[in-house]
Amino acid sequence: MTYVIIGAGPAGVTAADTLRKADPSTDVVMIGSEPEPPYSRMAIPYVLTGLIKEEGTYLRKDDGHYDANAIQYRQGIVASIDPAKKTLKLEDGSEQAYSKLLIATGASPVKPPVEGLDLPAVHHCWTLEDCRNIIKYADKGADVVLMGAGFIGCIIMEALAERGVNLTVVEALDRMVPRMMNEAAGNMVKAWCETKGVNVLTSTKVTKIEASGDKQDTLKVDLDSGDQIPAHLVVVATGVKSNIGFVEGSGMKTEEGILVDEFMRSSVDDIYAAGDCAQGPDFSTGAWAVHAVQPTAVDHGRIAALNMAGKPAPYKGSLNMNVLDTVGLISASFGKWDGIKGGDHAEAIDTDNFRYMRLEFDGDKIVGALSLGRTDHIGVLRGLIQTEVPLGDWKQKLMADPHLIADAYVACSQ
Image (cartoon, rainbow, N blue to C red; front, side):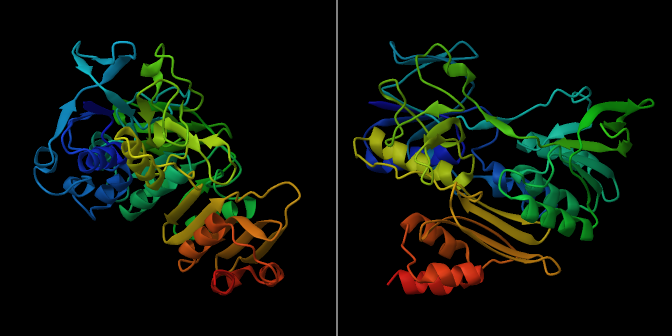
């Protein structure tokens, strides 16, 4: 029996370790596409700030972890899959046979159709190599333009701000973090960033990037407003997409990602998927979605590995949950944060102190929430949503004051 894992991110590494424990006598092969040891992309901003070194991003810190656990690590890029022969073909022409296969290839940054993105001082912030390139340009006082103010963009913004650059953020939609915040919360995040010296332009698009004069590392950034911004560096954070192009022709069903069932199985026998490339069960909606966050990837990897090893472990579904630190302001969204048709909601807003709480109800159950300016409630909100606990009389108390969530949790969980 040979287990093969394509991908060496959190999902792949978790799966490899789980397989080794669940089935000690079999071969485990993990294929990674980058020259560095398996690492966490979410740790890259901490390298930018200098808080950690590159080694601090590694998913397993102990020397020789993979060799010690008989996990064969192979560097390469998989070009195609032949399910009939149970083989993979790599871009270097070599092949790898498998008995059971896990696809955990993650996602890649979206490159918008903007002229000039191939200039030397324009970079994504997705790999350690990207990080090294950004550090070359992001000196204190440098003019930096960040394209995108979504979840990933805001994490990068935090790191760039800490480097002391002169930062302008350009977001095409009408608010910051639009896929996890409503208008009130998103605009509050924007106002907070502006108090920290970050220039934020919403409802604005970059139309062109060009070199300024003979210096290729001095740029002019054109906006659809007609304005032009000088920049020493442009960082692109306009979303990600699942890495699934290589599965074309394999027979696997795909939409935004590889469709998997509650056991993380694809539509092809003995092939599973996990992490940012997997479109799996969504706890809140009962539908299938790609939740491109590290906690979901880790859960996917563990569940997929158990099922590959013949230890049935159904997955209850991932909760759409994001917690974000934006230059010191903590924001969070949970579940159906934008509400349901016909549902009630409770809202408390304190603009002056950057505090916000909104709860979404389905009957007397909380199904979604948004918050800003609090750090003591993350587990409580997640618990109330995932346990689907009936609130009874506590619903009306929360309608009057949504900040009473901890009291409600204690009262209703007994």
